[in-house]
Length: 203
Image 1: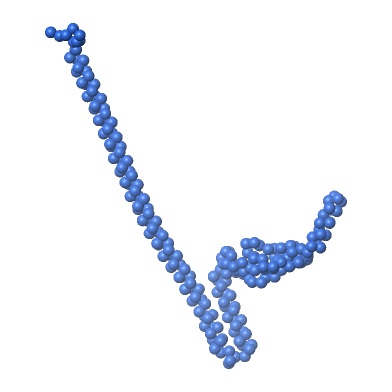
Image 2: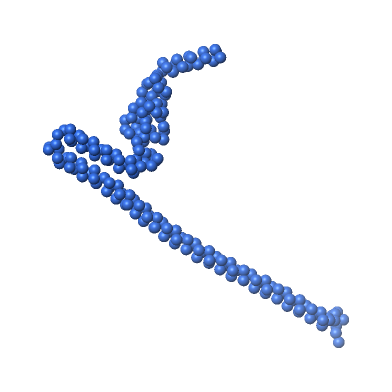
């Protein structure tokens, strides 16, 4: 006999609660399993990325070593090629020095001129060209000003003298030309200042 305060429970209600709990548990397990799979996939991707980064780092290191070796080879080959070309000039100068006492002054001068001509030809074949300077406007990329001189006969900043020749190597500046450039005298500047208001007034 049951207590009056207790309520009778339907067995079917208990079954529904158990089934609902089982479904919820199954769903949770499915979610957990799915998250585990996603985590495993992410770990695998991370591992693959790390492996790729290690391979790239190794490839880049190998490339740097190859590039350094290749640069050394190119520099050595270029130096060897140039030195071979200069050997003939070196030997010609050596002969000229050794035979100075047995040659006349004119023969010695002609020999030096021939050596200079050959030397110039070799340097030109390597891409060396002198930088034009005198009589041209000052070029900040090719000229280096060592001095200024008053000269009212040419435009200001015209190269008047070349103290040391400059050179281009395959269009690149190997050495700037050291030059003297012109500047206007103060008298000429004053004349120009006085003439300008007159021209404005006359206009």
